[in-house]
Length: 426
Image 1 (cartoon, rainbow, N blue to C red):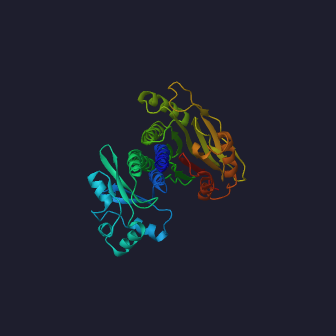
Image 2 (cartoon, helix red, strand yellow):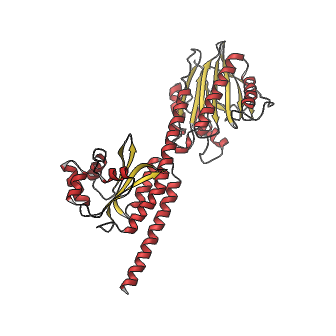
């Protein structure tokens, strides 16, 4: 009877481990954030298999400590574990697992093991207190023949040495873990590249004297959110000022690169021809058809001209959220005239232009759809809510106006946000 009970318990234990592995694998597949990936690995191990999990990644030809997951430990112990890694100690099990590209297992950590792993008396005392006499396992995270790092689990849940079934679990978990870490690192590098490209192209607005211009931009905080939002403002040869706010479909380096190309083409066409915005967009349609730059891009292109009693704003809209106007008395409206299809719909698309006179104290706001989407309602409702919110800051200075609008609406989300605000002095 005892043997039968033990056999049933062992089968049940293996089922639990397989279920744990399946849950962890699903979570790892859906993560593109490195910190979230490492946390998922650690939570798959602790507390079901071990009391402590440490993850070191290879950086600059050495192991660098990235995560210590020890929920039950005092803060001082966690701090020490985070500071004392394997980087300076070749005999450390994590270093041995990395160099050999094979698991290193110590059934029961001895005084000699502790002394070989940690150079300082403080660290040795900590190690002796935490896991001396218990098991330790370090498993390399290998992706396409390259060791990306090492995951180490220490002190089995039941104490003593790690059972073979738990070692098998950790080795199986290391396969999707390495893949997830590799994907997260690659995606992180791509995201940093896209952000660098975007920031390099977002130049500071000009200061012509007869109009104030301010801009704000915030990249998406979610991993998949880097895209092709941009703003631009530049002085035309005749002294007018061109305004552009646009959004290229996509959330990757390709979208950022396409944004850079379209931005440059808009600048070149506007400066070279002197045409009104609707004609510039029509020529941009033709060039896009010829060069096959983009499948989906929205933008608003405007032109500011100084008048004796204000500023004339002429614009054309290629499928983009409409500009907003806020008057000094707090009233405002949506400039929804002149709307057209997105850029890239074809060279024969007719573009319509519209004109609005901006009097002294009036504020013009151009923005990308990240400011009005995903707020629990339709885009139209988001635009009206934005107009209402912007109207409350009608008498604030332009920097304060931008902060009022941007900091309230540009919350962390899956899309970039850019705004371009213009104020007629007086």
